[in-house]
Length: 414
Image 1 (cartoon, helix red, strand yellow):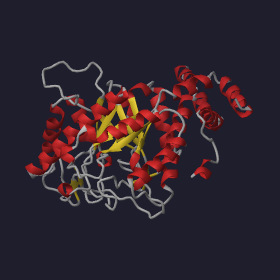
Image 2: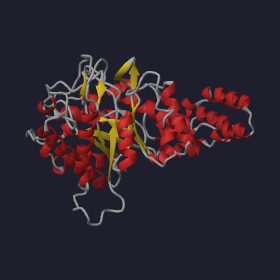
Image 3: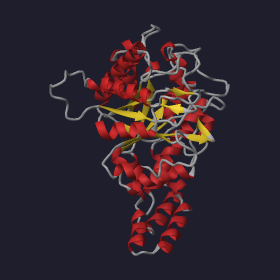
């Protein structure tokens, strides 16, 4: 232990916080790192492809990988610089097919065997995402809510197969795989019919979730601990659907609550600028719901910037801690920035989120609650302000060192 950590440990002890306990808890809270920051969400289908469907990775920094081999070289470096428990979030377009073009509605677990072996080697978990965009069948801007039945059928089959892949990954790694569904469907201008697309989306989701992800026929016994957990990611608007988004927060909240077939995914960049995810969490925890989080940084709109230690990121982790909900919250990142070094961007985002989790674990929450019970808002505010300047950074540096990762100066390795 360093002298600086010893000092920090004593400071926190004066607030009745055990930093050693917090460091142990950190190893039980993995952060799922989005794989697509490393290559601007291009994937392995076509290394010259440009993301579409309301997505735009901006910037032209040098170093974007142009092969699977170059991509994994960057991935190895990135993972080596992120300390502690972690997962990788994959998209279906990162299938390892040895150069063969596999239609998305024909993907199988075998196309992700290489990822499962890679995760075992690295000692990490995997999450998964169907890719309902950047495809000729998504050119109209409509997928699961398309008025074209053949288009819906294609994407429904894609969703079904991706759930099987999620089940496979979770089973292989013996930890739940969160398979997150996000669609770009919406309208650039005002629609007269807002109900129709949502009714079609509901029916499509029902079809996707009808078959068990483990492949067992309906009516047969299911595994007691399913390894695939589906989540539904809402959005306020995106490029090309500024006026109407089928998969809104309200739609998915209702679907999750009434069907129980999935959990809700909240992305910090997918809401009105005056909304915060942190203020929403306890309303879902109050009803026993689990939550998937995508941490990004909106700048005026959903621009998926690299996360930094903002007030909102800190508040989200504090809210989870105060609700004792780390056990029912899945934490991941979701951003893409091609204007800076892509490896560094991934590292910054992942380390920021992990540091925010640790900062929340170090909060002397019992003292805050005691002040509230004593009806002493003055003391509560004093404590809240004092906690902001406690040496959490020194504890995070110790966490990095214990995991063999440089706390400072890591950019030199890139």
